[in-house]
Figure 1 (cartoon, rainbow, N blue to C red):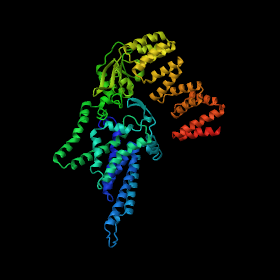
Figure 2 (cartoon, rainbow, N blue to C red):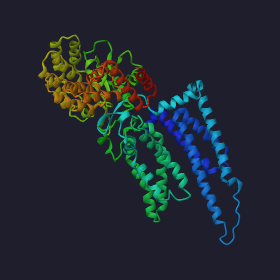
Figure 3 (cartoon, helix red, strand yellow):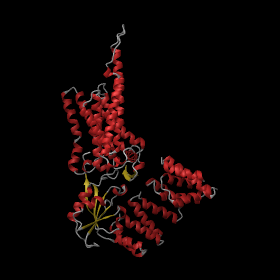
Figure 4 (cartoon, helix red, strand yellow):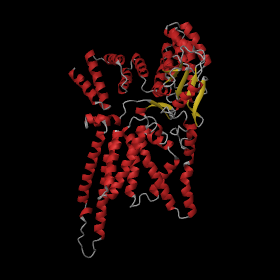
Length: 602
């Protein structure tokens, strides 16, 4: 939470607003039916604040309704109990519940307050949100729908493999929370329900606190939400956890009868918080890169989970380059070229040194193709296999930014540009010269993926198939699950007519990246050539569900349908039906109706 406060203005603000909302809902219901004016005002502001930061803050309104309903149910049983206890067993006595305590009166008053506060909060939110001012209902609804399912899916390191954010295991968020918050918080919130948290007088408040962090996590799991960057999208659930933990340790102290036990239990949370405190002091400004004892700390998390997914380390890396960079004689201009795959932040940090430096863009696996003198690369997105290999960091690393002894950002210094020269010769189809320079680059750095990939292509293009295989083997020795390396291996097996092995690699590629269309396309071709039309069709139907079907693959599917005995019109109709079914399954109503209409019109 402290680490995110450095640059995560949305999630921190949203968490604050949501906690304010939960607090003032609780305070409102404690004071009800005569809440203070200040409580009403602050509750309204809290709901408006939450919605203005992120539209899902509108959930505070149903929260208010749910907690209010539970309050009324609680009041109903209180009235019923009061009536029962004051009725004589020998003589029935009519007991009148005061009007201000009657269920009807409380329901009407709570509904009035709730409606008024919700409308006022909504209006206040619209007034400070220009986009909502244009269409107060439609644009808010549109934003809420967009936030419910992020459109962009990215690959991230989870449990030691790169996984798509829209297809993560159901336990991604709860596991990430449990391995990246202090043990003190986990222990405290677990013990409170067993130490008086469910006593009658505390039950209602306890429910509110625990619901406020359990429900959001449950909803993310239930809806299979597209989340990434750890659990930052659920950061608002953390503050109620801390409240629950504080209540738990307070209850533990109250439970202890022995004065020595009281002292021990008072000191206990501070002792448990010592490791994260040391982490904060030792690793500033990278506090948010934290994994607790359940994960084995940073040393065990390294290579298994994302670390600096916010690219905080690019500032320190940029400052190091500005201070230490010198010309090597390899420069192709009067400026030192600094490449990175996060140019937005790096360009900002070099904004006052543009007379000496030029910032460029390069992906990690393509860095050898481009002209640069220094490279700044955060390890986010780099293959877990490579991170754990003995060739990482590469031998031209001149400085690393570290957390607990593990690199989170690399600064590379170009010692040779043979890889770039070899790539340029390859693009010009001057393959002999390309092979010479690429081999030289690989000798200097055996983990230079760009040089390896380019050399494989050179050997394929010059029909030196066995040399291509040797280079593929070198690539996969570095990273067994390297996607490009396995694609080249698949092509090698196809070229040498080892079809069964090619099919095995297709299946392997689906586990490495199940959205890789080539794996399905090649598998479909193999099945079709073998006469297994059903299997060939299924491969391409899976591509439709993955939204990866292009025109070439659609034509392939039409050929399969025609091979099954359908004429061109019937084959096209069947394709439209397959597309419609897929879009219906994925909840895309517009495209479902479009293809269904095309299907029915044929």
